[in-house]
Length: 134
Image 1 (spheres, helix red, strand yellow):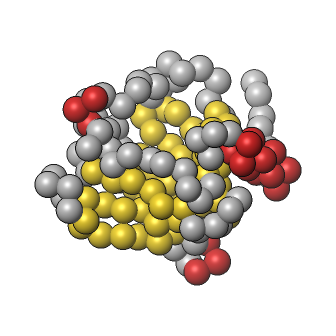
Image 2 (cartoon, helix red, strand yellow):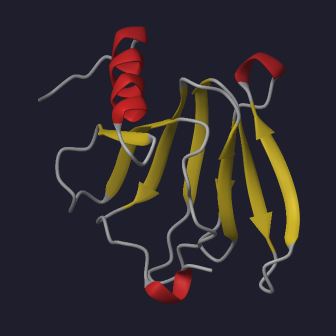
């Protein structure tokens, strides 16, 4: 049994790795294996990181984000690529999270350095299928 504490130090370490990563983001996996039935992770994101518009339809997977610190916009899109909605996640402003069904096109726009979300998705891990990237 492995107990993991999610504290400021872990968020700081993961954010530092995101800042030094050319993609400006870094995952810290809480699940132990990529084949686990539930993938749980911290996702540290910096302004300027590029997350293409995508969905999780092949295979279908809901994706849940809970903001731990910082701020980001979750951008939701129609099937034609036009913007449907924008939801700002910021715990200090009272918007804590979002659950996105697998067939919904979405992306993120990070507003604050040091932003970290807790992300949950059905496992096992699978890369986003080419037909699920806009």
